[in-house]
Image (cartoon, rainbow, N blue to C red):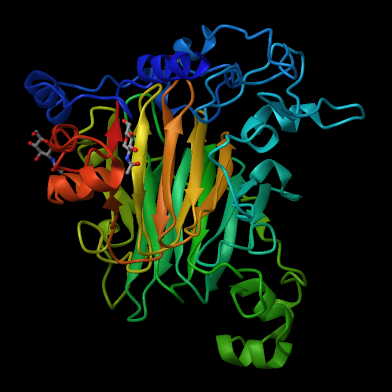
Length: 484
Ligand SMILES: *[C@@H]1O[C@H](CO)[C@@H](O)[C@H](O)[C@H]1NC(C)=O
Ligand SMILES: *[C@@H]1O[C@H](CO)[C@@H](O)[C@H](O)[C@H]1NC(C)=O
Ligand SMILES: *[C@@H]1O[C@H](CO)[C@@H](O)[C@H](O)[C@H]1NC(C)=O
C-alpha cells in the first residue's frame, strides 16, 4: 500500500522528470523556442534588501503526502514526509534538525542554527547523497575582511577552498574616487563589476597606453568584465559612486610569494640612490616621502573626470593607444542566449567567441528563472561559481557512487571539479538566480546529459534506464541549458 502511494506521488510531483511521457509537439516547440524570457527588474540586484526566501521551497505536491502515524520514528520533527525522492527537507520546527524520514535524531545540544538554515542539504542530506565528497563551497562572508583607507577586500584562496585549484577570487570595494594602487600579477586578472563605476589604466609590453571606464549593473543592463593578461601593469580608480568588483585569478594559490607586485612596495624595497638614478632624478630628497608601506588602496587628492570622460586623462604614448575593447568586455552589448529549455538565459564570454584577450578565463553569466534548473552537465575543466543573487541547490557527482548536495546564497563561491556531473537549481519560486560560471580555458565548453541520451540509439538508453524508447525519443537533441 505504501509503495503504491509513493509511486503515485512521485509521478504527480516530478512529472517532467522520471515519469514524463515524451513532450508533445507543442511543448517541444515551446521548449526549444521560448517566445521571451521576462527579466525581473530585481534580477541585477546583488543582494536583496529583504534577504533570501526561507528554504520551504519543495514543490507543493510533496507537502500533501499523508503523515503516516504508524511509522514508529516519524513525527513532526522530520524534514521529509514520504516519499523521500531526495527533495530538500523542510521543517515545521523553529530550527532545522538533523533528521530525515525516521533517520537521524534531534539536537539535544546546541548548533549554529543560522548556518544550518542556509545549508539544510548539509544537515538533512537527500538520501541520494552518498560517499565522501569534500566541501566544495565557501562563503565570502566567512573570509577575513581587510578594512583600508579607501575600501575593503576579502578573498577566497586555496586555503579556504582546497579543491579550487584553478581559481582564487576577491571581492574588493573602492570608496568614491579612491584608487587600487599601481600593480601587476604573475597571473591574469579577470574582473566583473558588481556595483558602481570605475576607471582602469594600463600599458602593454609595447608601451601602448590604455584607459577605459568600467560600469556596474543597472536595472536594465549587465555590467562590464575586464581582463589583464599576466604581467600587464594596471591601476583601478573608483568614480563618484564607488566601485565594487569581483576579481578572479586563474591560480588557486594566489597569495603565494611572487604572485602580486605593488609598485610602491618595490620602490620602498629598493636602495634610494638606485631608484633616483633609475628614474633620472638627481635630487634624492624629492623621493624622501615615497610610501614605506604599500597602501593597497588609497584616497585621491583630486576627483577624476566623471564617468564617460576617461579620454580627458589620456596620456599620449609615442607607441600608440590600446582600444578599450582589448581589455574590457561589455556584457551590456551582448544579446542574451535564451536557453532552449525555456528556463533562463546565458551570456558567454571567452577568447574564442568574443573576447580574444581572455585566454585563461571563459565565463558565463547565468540567469535562472524561479524554480528553473541549470541542466545536469559536466565540463572539461574545473567549474568555479560565484552567486550574485538568489538562492540555489546543487549536487556534485564525483563518480564511484559519490555525490553531495550543497545550498548557495549570494556571495558564495564553489567549485565543481573537472568532469564532476552537476546541476544548479534555483530554489526560489519568486526570485531569479544570477550566478557566474568560470573556467580556466580559452573556450566555454560543457556536455549535456539530456542531449547525450537524445543522441544515443533509443534502445540502448531504454535498456539501461528501464524506460520505454518513446520516453527516450522525447528528450531534447539540443542542449536544454536551463530548464523551466
Ligand atoms: C531599479 O529598480 C529598483 C527596484 O525595482 C527601483 O527601486 C529603482 O528605482 C530602479 N532604478 C532606476 C534607476 O530605475
Ligand atoms: C543582438 O540582436 C539584435 C536583434 O536581433 C541584432 O540586430 C544585433 O546585431 C545583435 N547584437 C549582437 C552583438 O549580436
Ligand atoms: C524494469 O522495471 C520493471 C517494473 O516496471 C521491473 O519488473 C523489471 O524488473 C525492471 N527491469 C530491470 C532490468 O530492472
